[in-house]
Image 1 (cartoon, helix red, strand yellow):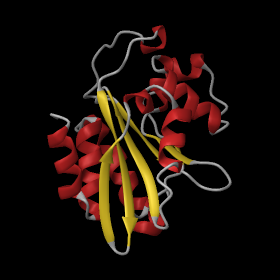
Image 2 (tube, rainbow, N blue to C red):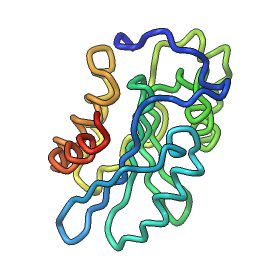
Image 3 (cartoon, rainbow, N blue to C red):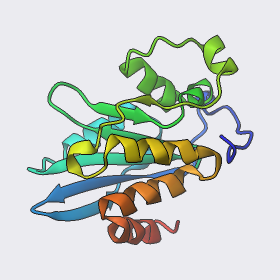
Length: 174
């Protein structure tokens, strides 16, 4: 990513900077809430936290990891639907490697080292609730110009919950 800078190896156990936001749509209204810090380092923790929301409406999580990449996690009965904005992040971040593993992505570290950043997962993860696959693809293509938090902001604007997201980020001091 053009906005990417050299980062210490997060696989060594360092906690990444960033945020997790749970997004819920019920009865035509969006709600956003901060997620626990564990969601930034563990896909299982993120999935568990989102499942505990037990909403009748749509639920998904947006995870910004070090403003380098983001993950969309949408719990489903048959297993979470996932999108990783930059698969090459798996070289440095456990959560990105966990997403690739859960997606059964057959990509080894050598391939990732040679690759330019690319998304992996379900581009249609939010299509049924207001973000067409083509629009998400355009947002992902802007990774050279936008940091992950800015891409998440674009997603929120496109879907109509930008104000709710901004309120949560303000509370988090971001």
